[in-house]
Image (cartoon, rainbow, N blue to C red; front, side, top):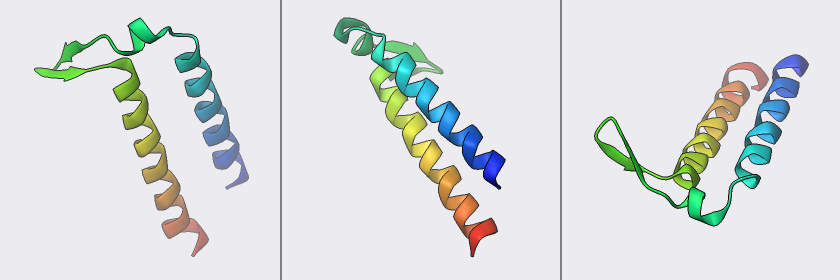
Length: 64
């Protein structure tokens, strides 16, 4: 379990580090993926929500 949480922390830190490298123009530029509009900042929110989902699953399935 400790290794899973360490990996989570590393992935989270690297995702934040990547997003902080982009300027505002890039972060707000809309692109189409699978016929839907997305911005890099929007994808950041999706990733953050997905991480929360995984943390909830770890808590539910391994820590209860």
